[in-house]
Amino acid sequence: MARVTVLYFAGASTATGQYEETITLPTTPFPLSSLASHLSSLHPGTGLDKVLATSQWSVDAVMVCEPETCHLKGGEEVAVIPPVSGG
Image (cartoon, rainbow, N blue to C red; front, side, top):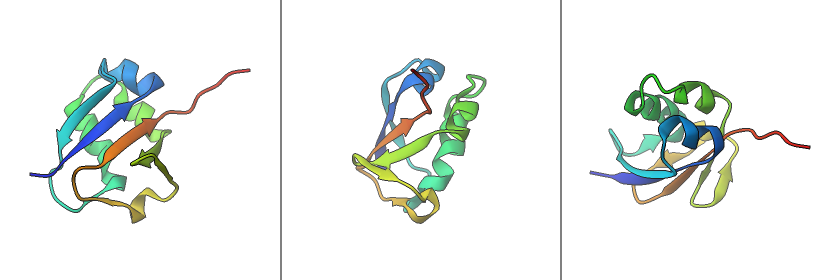
């Protein structure tokens, strides 16, 4: 089974109560564009789905501009980067 490490920042960390977790991918290769719904199913009722709807992604410390073109094979580190505000 292929696994990835997911890093949660800001609102994603607040919603999950975690800074990181290792998850098993349902299939491989697994489209990054489907990861939000998979993570939401692992954390129902937390509001994570709303955070992920506006978040960006990085895979192995590289920002992903087009999640639909990225497929996870296992072993990657995926970061959830919610929008931040500040002055």
